[in-house]
Image (cartoon, rainbow, N blue to C red; front, side, top):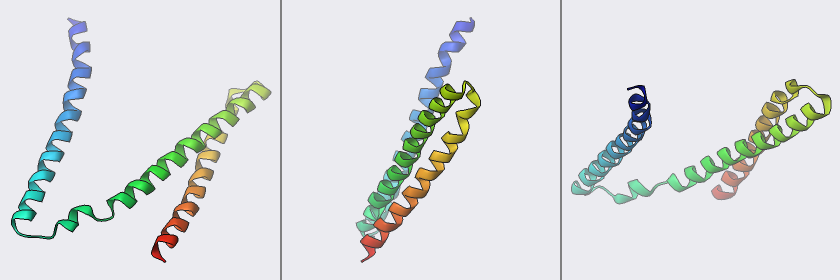
Length: 115
């Protein structure tokens, strides 16, 4: 009987994610149809979402790259000093450093686009 409930966990998780996505897409479709019926400009749907997606991927990419470099440096330090305590600090230091670099790059991209 316990195995039955264990099998329901991934099924329930999948159904929950599918349900949330379905409700989101259905309500978005209804909202767009209502705006189109009232003759509201369709450019509302295609605003600056592409730019936001680009910056979002840049942020996540820089965080993951910093995380990876920090993890690599942490493992090298832990191996050199035979202490696992050295893994966490470089992880946070390099993740923060790459987010600062990402902020500078993003600011330069925005300034270039505004010219």
